[in-house]
Image 1 (cartoon, rainbow, N blue to C red):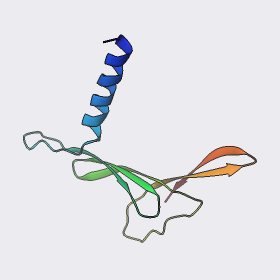
Image 2: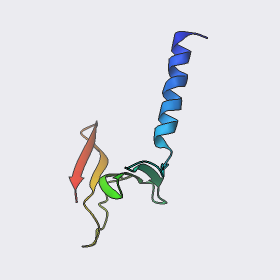
Image 3: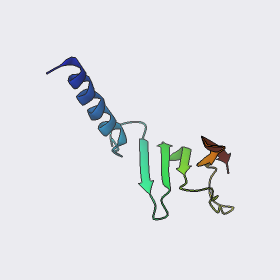
Image 4: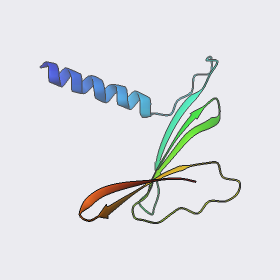
Length: 94
């Protein structure tokens, strides 16, 4: 097996381990990463540490903004767009 193939397999295994939400009952801390795809085509990812959300990223399929309520936590929204033929990512903090 070539070095590139071994490196690719190691990278895929490490990504797989990091993306699976798992908890260790004996640990003093809890880290959870979730990625969900919604019916409207948007992708939402969250990073939780000790049951507190540290970061939320929502990638939308078009230029629509999500509706937020007063009780929802802060979120970062990344919206893809094309301006003058160039691909543009708009970052919004809600």
